[in-house]
Length: 264
Ligand code: SF4
Image 1 (cartoon, rainbow, N blue to C red):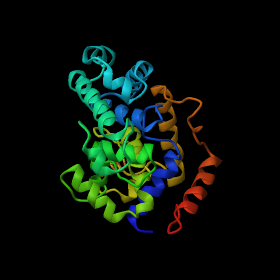
Image 2: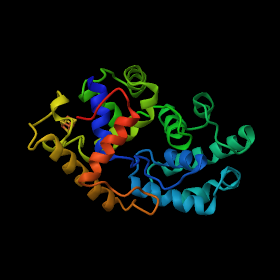
Image 3: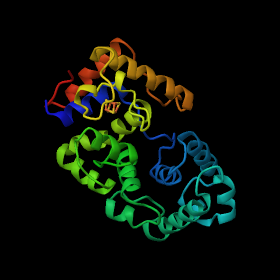
Image 4: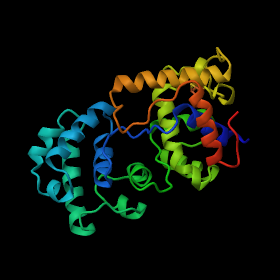
């Protein structure tokens, strides 16, 4: 199997159906606003602030009428709250004025909204509409370059390059797999190379694997499950973390999804 497929399948085996999208919000409007709020902010802080904002302003029409001062008061715990308050209000106004209060589901329309770039638009397409898109954040950009899947300088270049090497049916899995790997195992300052399932495939590895591949799947999953609990995002809607034999079943599921490859 070629390297890009092997990378994606191994990461999907570790992280299963869990999602990199940190909010528990599910409507396109809430996913869009939540993603805007999340820039340079910890996941848990974003989730709490978004929850409070949507409790008072659940949709575009209500947020469009909110005062900037009240939005700022609610979202104050997050970074750049002055600018983000203005963005989300003008965004809601534009949705009401031009899109009948609904979030559009095309890249061109999404990037025409205030504060929405390709990364946010791709997140919305991916997580709100289940459309093929690759949202490139710092993790996706860094890890795909570290693995030499791409050789790029900007996230936009990375997005285009990844779209060349992955089939369209794989696009919506790329952000999820790479972000969760970057948050849990391939940490920017201290990557856990000894337990990494990509160790043999990675030119940037800092040390050899400490255990066989199968044990690294389990170890990476353990790290992920622990951090997931610490973040406090697991709720009734979250898939139950996989352990032991369940990983074998997950491999089968992924292989049936991706007929051209096998998880080794
Ligand atoms: S081997 Fe290390 S540097 Fe390479 S992907 Fe794994 S954790 Fe990251």
